[in-house]
Image (cartoon, rainbow over all chains, first blue to last red; front, side, top):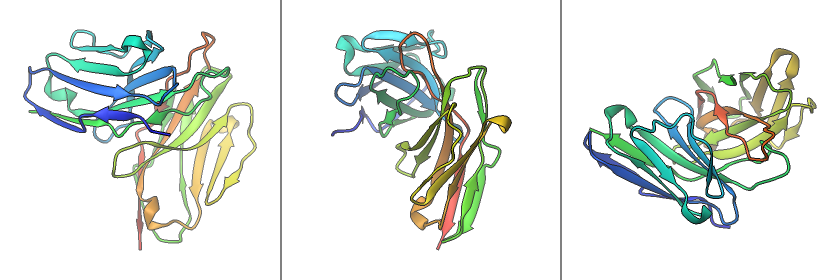
Length: 117
Length: 118
């Protein structure tokens, strides 16, 4: 079974530029997550989709971050414009839907390491 | 609000030593799940173990074991006979059951960097 795919793996941009990340979850997984992991910290949820609907985006800085999951499969996360503090690893994860919310482990992709200069 | 605290930041052991990673959590929910994930240098988070809030029976799985104590809100993880390949960052995480039918997010601790020396 193929894992969660993310691209690019690395990105370096200057502040105020725009950037986009792509994620393809495991086939059949209804739930998709984007996490931000700043160096030395644990991942923090930015946005959670179930199929193509948003379940939780309370931690997403909506003035500069946006995400979509068209057709309920792959997803893109965009930052426009980027700030220095956006330097982090952006992790995508997916999880199958079950009758026990919270039970299923999340499967993570390799992440995209963003450096904002 | 839910919170996960990993007070240890870095641990260094010699190969074959046992090592315990501590985790303390906070939640208002009565039903929740606790996880341990491993993040090797490659960066990908790897699921290790899961425990639900209504099952405090501790278990052993190979070289891994865990001690879940609801009374102290702790979920500690032990690696027996550590190996160099165990070197990684280990995260404890909490997931709360929701009633909406959707999967829940994970709340992570800050992680513990484990170094196993040959």
